[in-house]
Image (tube, rainbow, N blue to C red; front, side, top):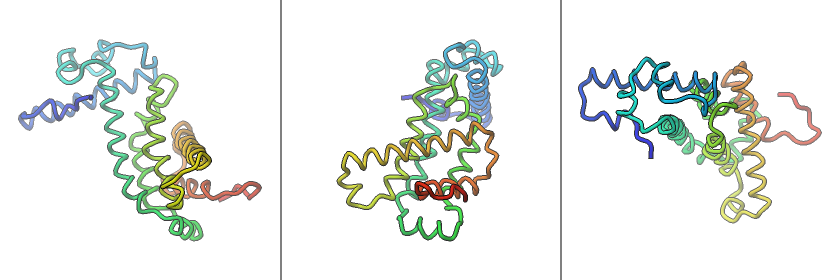
Length: 212
């Protein structure tokens, strides 16, 4: 399992702790820039260190290799997203319908899109053509699949049929597509607008007007 800098650095002085945080941020920024410019497979630890203005010793004090760095950053995002599961588990179809009728954004969806915006540089790089093809399915499963599963009737959640599984897979993949398009097009819509769009897409019917 990848090891975070905070774990490796203990016990350390407060000044050293700040240096570690700065080093980690520099490596994160370097990884993002190089993935966007060259693609993940086309750069080395030396390239990362040069871009981050750090020596190799600093890098290897905390990470085994560049994949360890990448997986550590991915794991941190997934761990952050886990907190949205509590909100999703408290959702009910009745509540979603009530909010939809009022055309108000669902608060936890607003928070989710706020978080995705904060992580946009990393997400754009890791989910792009030069990124890590393993990450998008993780994002889909931790956010999109849970969202759909938690609004299903109990009898479908507890005893899913093959069709229910396909239903969940269909909508989860569709929601991942919504997130991906938002990131790729520069996040022009606000988090509130995206929360309304996400809810509207869940309930739209074939042949119905595709307007908010």
